[in-house]
Length: 327
Image (cartoon, rainbow, N blue to C red; front, side):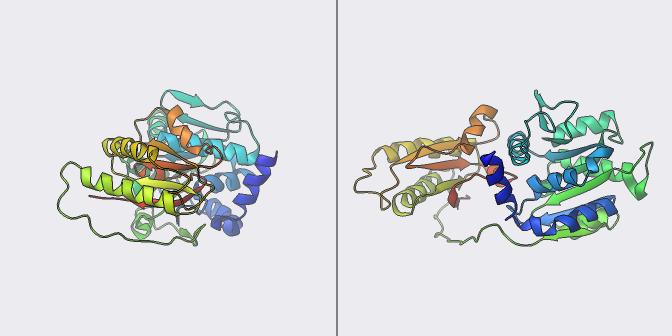
């Protein structure tokens, strides 16, 4: 119960919260709607809850697509926790080889591939009242196809055998919303301003000559991460790299370097007594991916080394510093 209260308190502080009524009304009033807002504004977790609370689920499920399976799973877990419901009941998820839903599921998170299979079998998605296509700026092939199919199916508010029109919401952090709106019959664009936290940017000097085997910039990002670990106050670190190979190299090097740290003398914050290094990329098993969301032991700083999978729909609690390195 205390966990639910904590989640509800956090949800009330999100930028999207102050637009709750207007956003729900915009979905009700339009067949197509584009919603845009900064990462961390609360679009992914809160909008489906608002629609559920407004009773829209009575006309069918609220479906929310994600480009990646880890996002579909973790967001469903978060929403069920916020609502105080058991995962797999009113709130569930479906990814390839893992269907955590039931007949009572009214908010269903899924990969865009799962939704594509559903629309190919049932072109009007008769089980759904609202379909939310999240992370449209990722431009995944499945999401692009879904947008095209849904436009064709629901064009001009056609029912096509449905009792009520299907509502389609396309959500994006950075997409060119004007072009998307024009494609979707000049539908409205709902903008959610504001960020959850202030962000300070610090730019490092260019590394130098072309790095053909990624060794130089991997060493550089490890150097930056260790500098943060030893000199900054407690708080977790999120490092972005370009792929699995670089992530494995960086984690191996971080582990070797971290073993040599003497926490009596080398670390400025005495409350920091260790470093937990966790990789994150799409090919990892789901159980291993879930580890990044677990709090580290007391006194240990968590360092997540990830691809851009960690930049879409995922909020890793405790992260205070992140580093991005590109060739």
